[in-house]
Length: 382
Ligand code: TRP
Image (cartoon, rainbow, N blue to C red; front, side):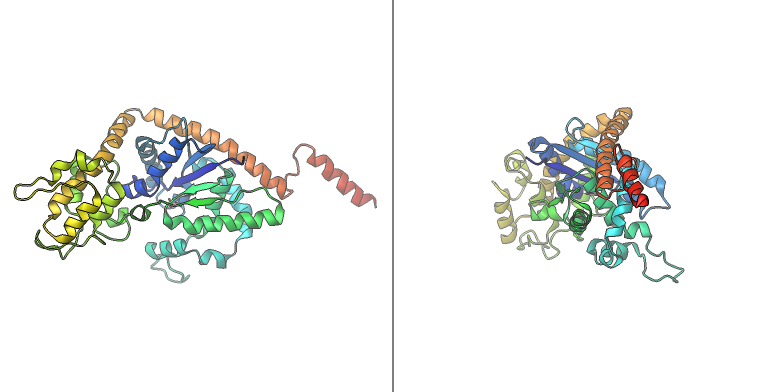
């Protein structure tokens, strides 16, 4: 049976939020516990983070530990998953250098995620606009480096959010091009997307399309309970739902999107008291019943937000607790990273050797030099 290998990761530019959690992190922990995979690699992509943070390496450096703490608190287990730091594996840059030749500038320009990110960061296409920064070459090419990340570990499965789809597609193209040009050294990966629409792209607390630090609409995994409540209280619901008795909209209502992403069957029993009020009370057994009542009118936003808060904290509390413990043991966290990086490096190094062998640029490998000398002697003796 061919091996099943996971590689995925995050840029360390901030603490992880609940969008990361439902979009990918929770799935990784499930996959880790499923025992279906021969190997799981989780990468802290600090080198990729530098492609648009060249001037702020300190931010990236500080956030490596934050992401590592979030990983371990969320349930990634270093006994079962290899957690490592991208920049410490120089083999990745070497692979990138060879893959660069297999991709055109035109193809990179078409990458929709890179396009959107260029827009968002205000990088302009113009060379002579002094007011705005141009597009850093490293940033423009990061899909190629991401292909190196994935292929270095011969990953078969890449669990990521929807926005990463173009990266995986680009990786698959590079693999096909490499294998057909040089011989089959690389493995074509598959993307693994979240299975629930709400998890695919969790909106910010303000209802905006994406949870993002710069928009200030995130709930972080490490937020204390009172901060979570403040954020939930201020959440965007249905602007037309003015009176409790008014019919409310469920579609596009962020509170319901979060409930779709976080609610478990047992929550209705466990948090039944959230729906007991002074004037009206409800008894719900599932989310569909809650939605139906909200649509009909009579169910207030406050009651609903109280319930969401309880549901969120049910997931976040154990994560917060583990984080508190881990924060007291920083040497352990760095040891996890150091060991993981050492193990990851061995694997990447083997792949690089395979790649060089396929390209026949492994001149000094055992046995290869002798052959090379014979070949050239023959040429010159003719
Ligand atoms: N691009 C990913 C992000 O924005 C991080 C990343 C880098 C990654 N290399 C990867 C994800 C390889 C999956 C596979 O967070």
